[in-house]
Length: 123
Image 1 (spheres, rainbow, N blue to C red):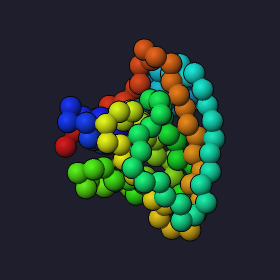
Image 2 (image 1 turned 120 degrees about the horizontal axis):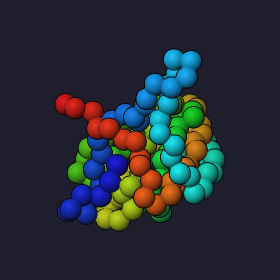
Image 3 (image 1 turned 135 degrees about the horizontal axis):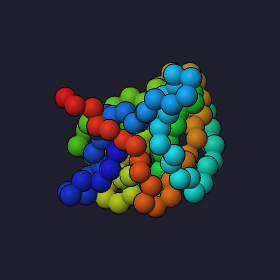
Image 4 (image 1 turned 90 degrees about the vertical axis):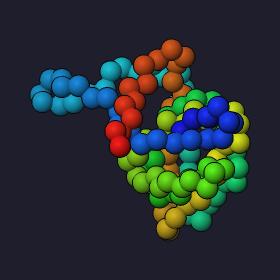
């Protein structure tokens, strides 16, 4: 999710770049991390229009959310999804929890100049 030229938040689905490593595993390139925090919001939670304070990854550990941008576009975040939150200016976005689970997430602020390993999904 990022801020477009018109000041509105936009989103695009994609994947984290993974490469083959030892034992047949796949792994992303090393991502320089500046800060890591964990947060939990009880079920039924929501947050009206806001911007992300800093560019960061938001990794959902539990809970399902509906995000919305000012143009009315909506998308769902599920456990295991990674949101690359870069809409730090403009109109921002809002979200609400769907279902009975709390939203547990990790906020990962990456170092400036880090390769973000994001590949947009071709439509």
